[in-house]
Image (cartoon, rainbow, N blue to C red; front, side, top):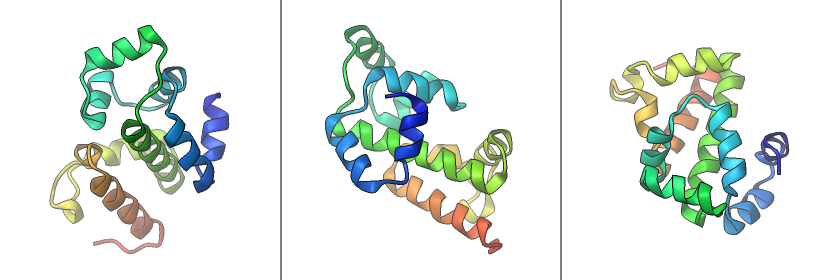
Length: 134
C-alpha cells in the first residue's frame, strides 16, 4: 500500500479498522515518517516502543501491532486535518510546536503519545476551523 492509498483510506473508518487489525506494514510506516515532521525518536515515544524495536521491525519487515497501528493512523489523520485547517504542513507544524493557551499552555506535539491527547487536538482543530478560538 502506498502513502497515497493510505491517505485516501483515512476517511473510511471501516477500512481503517481492517488496516489497524491487520497491522501497519513497516514499509508504509516509513512513508508516513517521511511525510511527517517527526523523528524516529518522537515516533518511538508516540508509539510507546523503543527506537530499537522500530529498527528491528524494519529489519524483519514486520507489521506493527494493533495498538501501534491505531496510533499511527490517528496521527496521520491529525496531520491531514491540520494541513487542511492551517493550509500547509509548515503552518500546522508551527502550531504543533507552539505553546497553546487553550491546551493548558503546552505544545500539541506533546499530546501525541495518547489517544485522548490526539482527540483533544482534533477537537481543537475543529474549533479553529469554525472560528471558535479560546
